[in-house]
Image 1 (cartoon, rainbow, N blue to C red):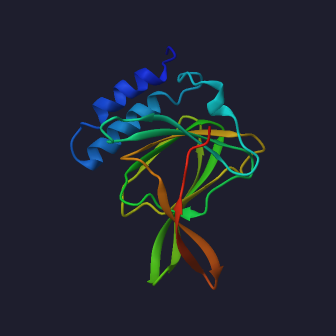
Image 2 (image 1 turned 135 degrees about the vertical axis):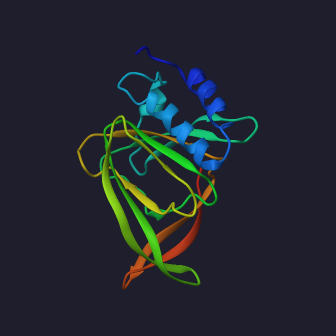
Image 3 (image 1 turned 45 degrees about the vertical axis):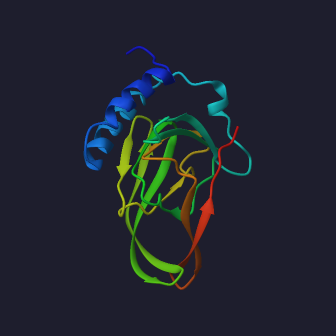
Length: 187
């Protein structure tokens, strides 16, 4: 397979987000993301590959002018990860371009005011070439690059622009406190 650039990926995603209902859209987007996950298939500027020392790098690859979706590339140094979080009311497709990532999905089992208890539903090793999707309300998950001592590069498509999310930090006795966290892009 020949390499493609971001412009070609965007053209394919533009068609995919017109596929109909949210499940059809996420499956089509997942197919298109999986098509670029083969080694060397997606040409990216070197800036997308750079990790940061204090947090995973979150870089915007494309924002649809009609605001139907955005595409981000995340660069994870070894040991970096997220707390349990959601993507409020946004579908998402996440794929591994390079490296490996631990993905753990959670289900809320008890909620009170600003805190929750979660049960892990599934944990798996996501490897280069693999993509999955999340559709609300089944979206609570955590990602970590702690399986190897190598950086990891992932691509994420969201059904809109993810600029804030609920994060859940442990507070003891199995409880997690919910916080609304604003997120931004790295350069």
